[in-house]
Image 1: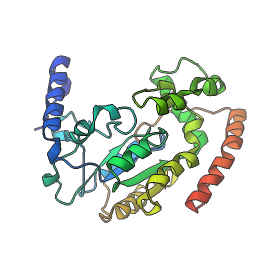
Image 2: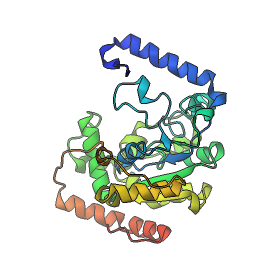
Image 3: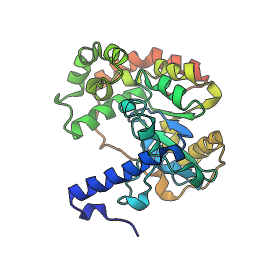
Image 4: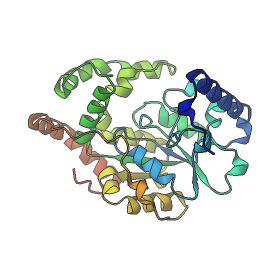
Length: 293
């Protein structure tokens, strides 16, 4: 029987979640870490991929499972290697099922900010060196515009137009990465959420991860390929993870975090296309494949 948390008072829900997390921390020594990390990118389809992978019989959700949560409320990731690293290893491991219950099944952690955060790769390599690294990339022009629309929908971006946001992006990000590096507890809203152009410059961010994880431990999926053929893309990921392909139910091809289509100004598209051209070429060289952007 599934607990319908939506019918409970907020204090009861919060107390229940706190108790579950406390139990997870107390038993963290029984829990392993991630078998794979879905490191992004933001607005590239990583949520859709994660929930599709959960349909595989050899992939488990994070703790607690959906049996203890409202329907479709699986936890995708906990932002440990980016925003919550100061909470410590016991807190992180509290989100994983007990090792004795895994029975050869895999568990992954996903955060779209892992790719862009300047310390995430180093932290992950130190604490989860055997994890497989998954990355989804998308046409960076479409990604940037989708990112902006998402912030506007959440009332988290005061500027009304994409062009205004792009014009002030460098100013918003000025010095933020340096502050994160200087103080690992520092959290930058602008760096994570208002970096519309910068987060699509994939190659240098991926290269940072590949300094810590060998190429055979990294799998890069193109979002356009995933949405065109979810089964084929998930089969490739499953084989990369060493668990073999499995048929996906029709519901697994659902696109999460989809935003209503809106036209991007042709001049802005052209400007961003020119900006991303060298980054896209660098990524193609790094991956030794054409991306079609």
